[in-house]
Length: 48
Image (cartoon, rainbow, N blue to C red; front, side, top):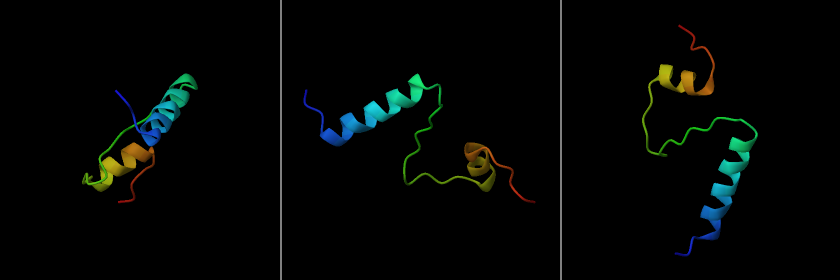
């Protein structure tokens, strides 16, 4: 199986983040989030 260069670069980035103990979230570009879900993902509070 041959992977495109971009896929290999992305996997390397994900692995580097994991080694450094950083969490990652993968979300499809067309996903719709509520304002609360977006705030939770960004670890910020949502103004009321």
